[in-house]
View 1 (tube, rainbow, N blue to C red):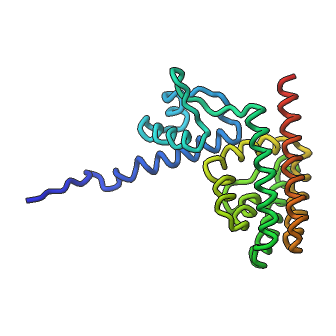
View 2 (view 1 turned 45 degrees about the horizontal axis):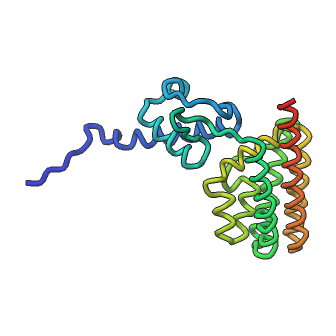
View 3 (view 1 turned 180 degrees about the vertical axis):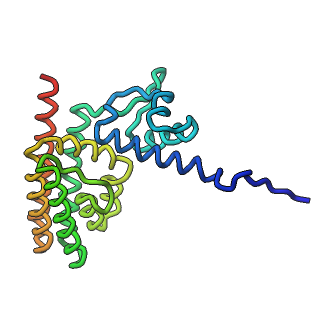
Length: 232
């Protein structure tokens, strides 16, 4: 007679994955926003207390953070929050300028009218968000409410999408959070997003690419200045 075992509590089997996922999202948000500082050593007992979670789900969350490059494991030294040094960030922005420029060109060619309308509506929602911070910040959540994600998705190019929004996506978001810290950058970034969206709406592929490239290079200049000020 075959017997199958079942958990004493049917919800028990689902509890750990759910806790791990919630912990993963919480730590990810804190790393990207800088609340969990770059280079911070991962001490399980401290994080378990901070996030109110047991060691098992916490370790699963940390493993997922390693997979998306937000936590790095250093031989004989344990795990730490990734540190974005100047060279790494410069490399990311150089790659972004090329890839996102091409994504904007393809979006101007391929986006449907409904997608363009939704993109313009998204920017109005972003404007409201900036107003709520009195122009001090422009931070976008990930996924469909991320302007850059929408453009990459609209390129219909899987290679571009995988490189911009695959495992490096969260590192890119960390970089973007750095530029978003500049008070003057919020309105500038929104205005540039609108210019890019309008070029896409006019199906001007060349202009859409040029504007996106300028937008990314301008963001890098802002980040570079922040890094220089920090090192002074």
